[in-house]
Length: 312
Ligand code: CP
Image (tube, rainbow, N blue to C red; front, side):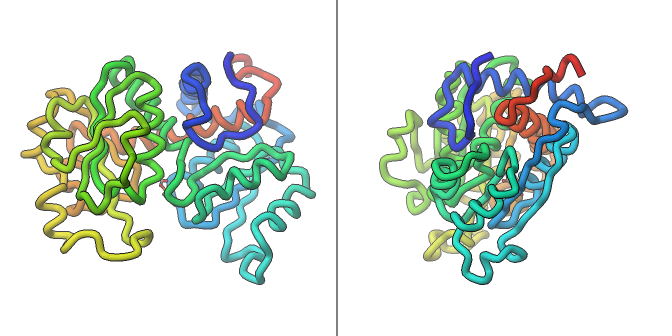
């Protein structure tokens, strides 16, 4: 097994072998979620803190479900209910949490780099659940798991990631993750939503959505992140949907067995037509299911479960 990390912070720092270990472990964890009794004692006695400084539906709940299925004790803290509203700094909050001796702190934060800063200052393992526009490694891992499960392997696939690339930590983490695992990643979106120099990640870039979709094995649509945009980057949502939205017509340019993905939350009728999001090629809810398995694997790997999931 190739994994002996204290923290999981981004996809850059994970090797191909480590990613494979996470995906293989998650496959075994998924089997636990399919049993009538979905619980094993693997992390009994371990404590997991879920510290979410930004809203979340999928990531937060799936980490919580993952911790419970492995019998860890979990507790949730949000910015609004913590003493950060009284002016306590992130590092002071984390130091005080650490004083209660948790094994893992899962953190989502509006500021890029916040999990990295904590990782160097606290003894608990830190798992990045999304930081600013920087990284969302558990999302990339669940996306890799879902594609590997459906296609058999990742190497050689053409993966189109389309939308608001500039503000998307998912685009960055998926771009790095899929490239590392041997796929060819093409990013597409309006020029105002594509950061300069993004090609250095090893991906291709086009402003024409049709070019990205052509012969794609996987199409991942991204939400326009208006809450992160400092200024309006496109004329209207209606115009955005017309030029960049994924419609049934555009899907015909892709391979016949194309997989349609979206990290969520979806803006129906903006970046993706409802009939595509709910259609037969969509694996959006499979991504959510696999999110629990990936987060079980990450908690297990960093919290050092002493027993293998197979033996429980
Ligand atoms: N994909 C994702 O991070 O969704 P949430 O914001 O709901 O966690």
